[in-house]
Image 1 (tube, helix red, strand yellow):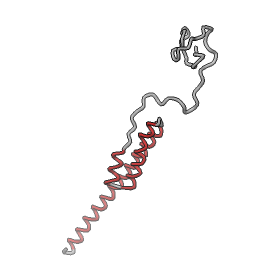
Image 2 (image 1 turned 90 degrees about the vertical axis):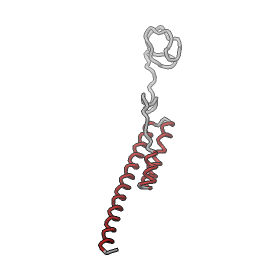
Image 3 (image 1 turned 120 degrees about the vertical axis):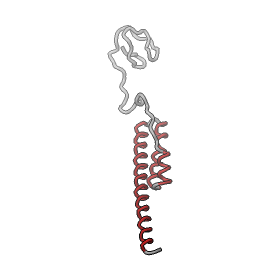
Image 4 (image 1 turned 45 degrees about the vertical axis):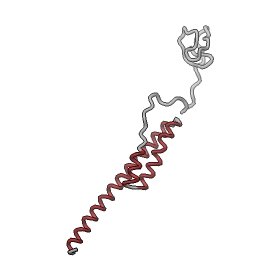
Length: 133
């Protein structure tokens, strides 16, 4: 049976609503089911998992590898905790995914540029040694 006040479902023999304490009608089960919540509105998914923000990674990439990608990573990483506090779990996960993506791109770009610079330095030393300098 459903509570006439809050619409919560209760045991058929309940005298009072388990949710709000309202006295239940003894006439029988309520023919009207509780009102449905609008789509997308309601409590967050049961166990809220921790969402990583990758802020430290993004800062390290900005300082050591690739500044533009690191800065974009920092922007998305800083949005994760704010969205979680606002109750936007899906937005926090999206921001976390984008922060991870930009941080990874920045790391790869920095690694490739570092390898190319090392090759350039090694080739330059070879040419200098061949020229007798």
